[in-house]
Image 1 (tube, helix red, strand yellow):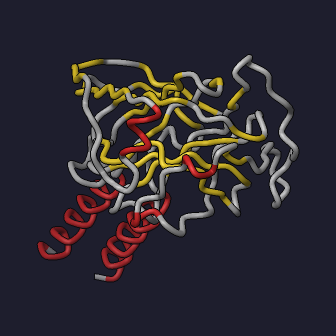
Image 2 (cartoon, one colour):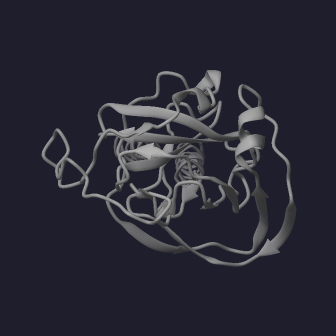
Image 3 (cartoon, helix red, strand yellow):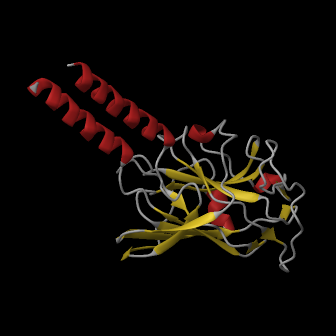
Length: 246
């Protein structure tokens, strides 16, 4: 009986650990004008010191089942801390709410996270309606295929991020609160981003302790991987079954 009790306790502890797994939670981007500074902010994954410690951000377009990579925005970011990154939004075609950011790291290639779709507007602030109102599976999430006006200006995807072309880009946003943590703010220009192509180095401008309320994506608010729930429930079910028969 002592052995069974110990097994149940250990199973519960393991399940609790799995359920505590979190991810980076990106905020919903604001509309950015081509040629102007665009900001990206996120709530860091403080539950791990390594899962998101080498994070990359990519500009994407397309539908949820055939995502199209456009350019790497930043590499070498520390996603274990809440922070922000500023860059110059590129000239694109079309100017519409059909773009989104993908957050990915070498240890999370199977579980990237995305922002909601946002608009890149013309330099004068003009946008058009997304070409498609529903996803291929019928879900009501507008989308379209955009492109860089100057494809040669694109920064290549990190080697660990190649082949990630489908997922579930959230349609709405929810508000989550982040506890006090070390927040990183990084700013770069177009020329700096281009020179970083194929590398994982960035320049940290400032770091300070902050406490903020982050506007995060719906579906990512809980920041818990669904697979972790499945494993945890399985562990607990096994423990309860053994308890009934022994």
